[in-house]
Image 1 (spheres, helix red, strand yellow):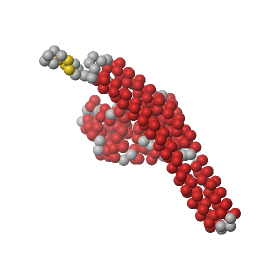
Image 2 (cartoon, rainbow, N blue to C red):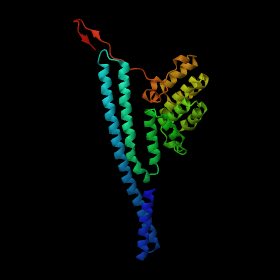
Image 3 (cartoon, rainbow, N blue to C red):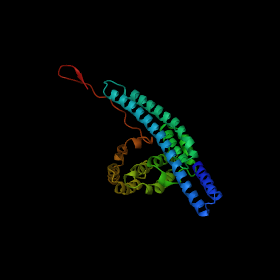
Length: 279
C-alpha cells in the first residue's frame, strides 16, 4: 500500500513539474506514467530483496537446526543399548525448540506488510505451519477461522490445506473436511494433490466409510500416479482395511499428528568371532 502511495505522489509531482514548466499536458501525462512505473518497480525490487534476505536467514536457521538433530539421531542409532523412548523425547524437544525460534523469527517480516499487500497472508501461512508443529491448536484454529485468509486457492500450499482438513477432522466436522478437500484439490495437479487424497481417504476409513475412501483413492491414484495411494486403493478394493496405511507419505503425513511415527531403533549389538563387538 505504501509503495503505491509513494509511486503516485512522485508521479503526480513529476507531472505537476512538467505542467509548471510549460512542457504540455501530453508530456506531463507521459512523464507521470513513466515515473510511476519506474518507482513502483524499483520499490518492489527493494522489497523483494529484503524479503529474500529474511527468508534466507530463516532457512539457514532451520537447516542448521535440522543438521544438529540429524547428528543426534545418527549418534543414537550407532550407540548400542540406547533408550529409544528417551531419545525420541529429546529429538521432539529439540525439534520444538527449533520451530519456536523460527516462529519468533517471523516477526522480522512484519514491517514488510506495509509495503506488500500479500505479505500478511504469507506470514499467517508460515505461522500456521509453525504453530501446528508446536501443537498450539487453539491458535491454529483461530488463524484458520479468519475470513479471507485462504480465499485465494492459487496461493495455498497442499500442507496448509492438509492442516485445515486435519483440524476439521479433530474437531469432529468430517463434512467440513470433505468440503475443504473438494474445493482445494482442483488447484493441485499431479503429485501435489497426493497428501490431500491421503488425508481424506484416511478420514473416510476412520469414519467407517471405506467405500468412499476406495472411490476417492481410485481418482487419486490416477490423478497423482502415487504408489501409496495405489496400494491403499488395492487394499480397500480387496476388503483389507487393516492394510490401509499412509506411512509411505512420510514426514508430511506424520507432521499432521493424525498418527504417531514409528519409534527410532538403536542398532543391535553383535559379537564377532574374536568376542568383540561390532554395530
